[in-house]
Structures are given as C-alpha cells and as structure tokens.
Image (cartoon, rainbow, N blue to C red; front, side, top):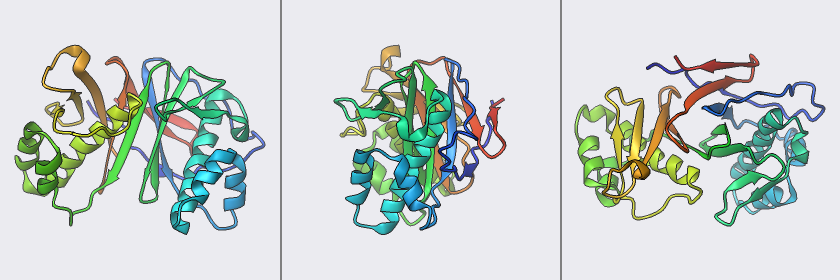
Length: 261
C-alpha cells in the first residue's frame, strides 16, 4: 500500500478567520500536517499572542532563543490548525493537560491531537474520538545506533537493526524509536523506560508495524503504527487507538487533503 508524502509547510498566524474554513474528519482516519517552524523576528509577537499564558511561560523558560522561537511557532501553528477543526479562533481554544500531562481540548473533547517537533520541523496528528500520538526524528549518520540499540532496545529490535543493508541501519533504528514514542504518546504516558520489554514488528514493505508491549503478543498488547513518508533524512510515525484507521496527509497551501492509496 502506497502513501502520500508529507509536505512540510509554514502555517499563517491569521486571527480574523478568513482562511479558516472548518475541516471535516472521519472517525476512521488520522489527519497529519507537516510544519516548518520558520518564524521571522517581526512575526514572533503575533505568534505569541495566539498562545495561552502557560504556553508563553513554558517558551520563555527555554534558554536558547532559537528553541524559544520554535516552541512559540509550534504551539501557535498547532492552535491555527486546531481552529480549523473547531471553528473557533486560535487564541480562544482552551487547551488543558490531563493528570498524565497529555494536552486536550476542553471544549472540543472529540478532537484528539498530538504535536511533535525536532530540528525546525513539526508534525501534528489529529483524530476524532480516538487517542493519537506522533513522532519524528532527523537521521544523524554520526550516531552509533547499534550501540544505542544494544543499550536500550530489545534483542528482536537489535536483530532487525543489524540485519539487512548496513546503509539503512539508522532508518531501522529510528523506526523502532519513533514507533515507541508515537505509541506511548497516544497512550498518554510519554516515553517509558526500560524500552527492551517491547519490540517492533514490521510489515514486509516496512510502511507499517505493530509495537508489541511486553512478551505476550496478544491483541490487547499490540499497538498499530503507520510510518510516514517525510523525504530523505527524516523518519516519522503515527500511532492511534485501535486498528481500524488510515492516515490522511493534509496540504495547507492548496487547501486540500491527500489520502494515501
């Protein structure tokens, strides 16, 4: 099964609602947005004005100016996108955190979402009435992924990473890593150590998989994962509650949604 490629784009910070036609989302899909976190210095005040007091405070606590601006951009763009599902102004969305720290929309509980960002890029996953998690990582060839796999991952993951084409070891390692991140975020608990208790089962073409939680491969211990087509140098994955869902890639600049075939 092929899949549409995620295009990373900038999201505007308009607050007048002119561009914000409401987006429909079906219960059997997860919609994914690729975001470039490029914000000019003159744009930051407008982006920050969309955020809640707590979001601005969390960004201000970051030491690096680059990290602060990217945090502001990521959460402002998240609000801009969520506003299209809710039909509300971005700055009026009430986003609270559960006892586990997972962000939820107080006034629109059926809309579930998750945000991840790394090295100036971000992914946002949105679903209806099912929990969802998303993660992405940049491929870094200088990292000794076999050593990391031996330290953190399961023997089954290590066998997969060491097998096959050595040139693809970093991609295989990151698939095992982002799959865990996406599943744990969908479950609302974040990355949970130790990681070697779980292992990733891949389909033959490597576009999908199941993270098996613990040694028992029973259905209740399996979490479906869909890997995303992000282009060279990036690995990303989506996980969602249940098994009966598909990924839909959203393209903001063209105001369209491209469903994988």
